[in-house]
Length: 308
Image (cartoon, rainbow, N blue to C red; front, side, top):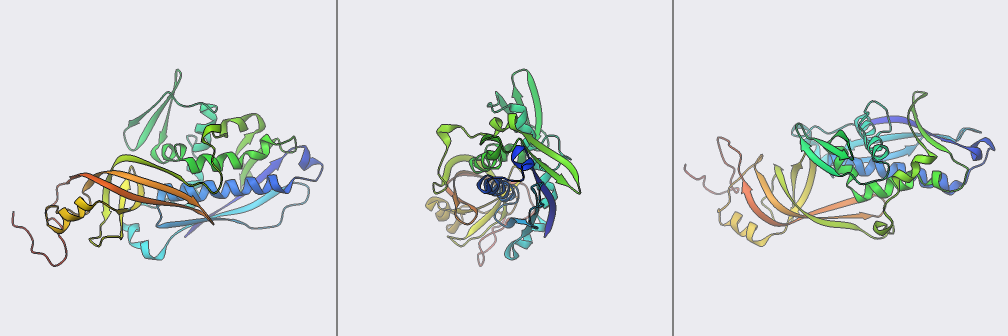
């Protein structure tokens, strides 16, 4: 388990007067929590859990809120640590932009695009992406791109910055670590974090969609209804496979494969928000198996190994 301590600082006329609307404060803290927990799920998968804790009472006259970003791996998924490098809470805070070590963070990308859509996003080496906006180009990591395109992250970012768009009480939201300011969002920048009106959804409406993708098998299971672990562009994806033809081919031994092989699939995903954000992934169609070279194939338990 890892944790990172931060201070969320609210600045503005409401702070100077010693009062602040509790709803604005709550929305910002909920947004901060949702951004961190969803970012952890995108990067580390469902095998990792994350929570944001408020550590102390508000400091009189300053409205500085101490929070702790806590992230860990659930007990039944600790075997994944050996095959996938889980990112710590401090690394996630850097990717999001809560701390300033990463100048190509998610928050930095939002500011750079100024609320507009990029003209082009192209994959480059080492799981990085080149973002083109007008005549300008910017290189960011795969996790940043995955977060930027995620609807739950967009909703959370809008909520985090909502106090800057409501009234004149709050002019600035800053994040400090060990007393040193790491990042800040100004009132005039709040518009960059607004979700497109036509895409807004209520808290009770799940976010869902489908996409074709290639997944690398990390942990397989030959029991229908159980989950498999995959890697997708460096992120962990935990999904069930619901494709009758695929399972027929597996049981008839027409498919033999193992960890490290790749599946080109149709992936259905659904995000629900109850007590926390939950994403459920289902592979509805397996188009093809892309085998990697290895000395020995894995087969169904209890079956004879094929002779090559």
